[in-house]
Length: 309
Ligand code: FO1
Image: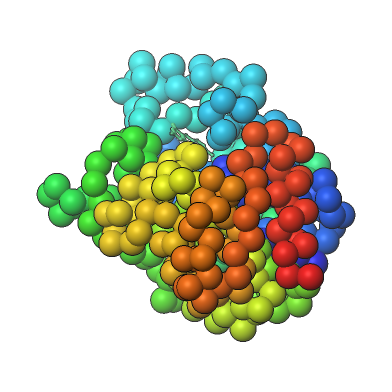
């Protein structure tokens, strides 16, 4: 089994590539749930849904989140009624949130419901929430020192405001989700997907058991840098690195992952930084990491799983 620590869009594309080169039954994704939110009484798990919809080939390709061929009638009704409309829930997507919320109210845990939803979409790999307990990324805004939930920062403020701190509420009490530690311990390789290290991977690693398990598999762990030529392809990872005191480059990523991963995969655009990455104490594999299409994602996945052999 290959265990993959995963956030949203970058991880989803990587996983779609991975299941083209290995049997999906041999892949376990351990997915961030600290972006989850409760809105309109619904439990929304954006990263789990992004991975599910991408693997089901139902993701909207332009947005990278939500379902393709989506309509927005429910949002129109909310707008008319003066409800919250800052977080867009498509009509097709809403079915997922209705189902998840109802099952959670019935007493099912998030792992069980996640497996049911993945099965419903015909997803063959094992999708595990990092935890079934409440874990929330909380973001402190630099301008006024106020603290907001991750989606208020990411979506409502379009990640356009400076951040001075990030914390993971609930991390000290939360237990790792069922199956996650076994998956990491028994995997032939552990992969840290090309997701935001500070707000997608960090909350998964904030679960003490998960961090310890990955550290103990360091020799077999490969991380993929989401930073290419100093930039994130999507989202605020580059700016967050700067704002939180890290170098916004593959070297900064290497520093964050050196205790956890023996190898960092970086893009060809950064080949000149390979020696500085190695100086951080990790092996460095230089390859094409931009997943422009399924073939590119499969090639990257194949290089990644070959890295430690
Ligand atoms: N991202 C946005 O930029 N705007 C939205 O309105 C939005 C709604 C949304 C609904 C469901 C879902 O699964 C994801 C959604 N996202 C939206 C994406 C989400 O904020 C991000 O993918 C992650 O949380 C960051 O990894």
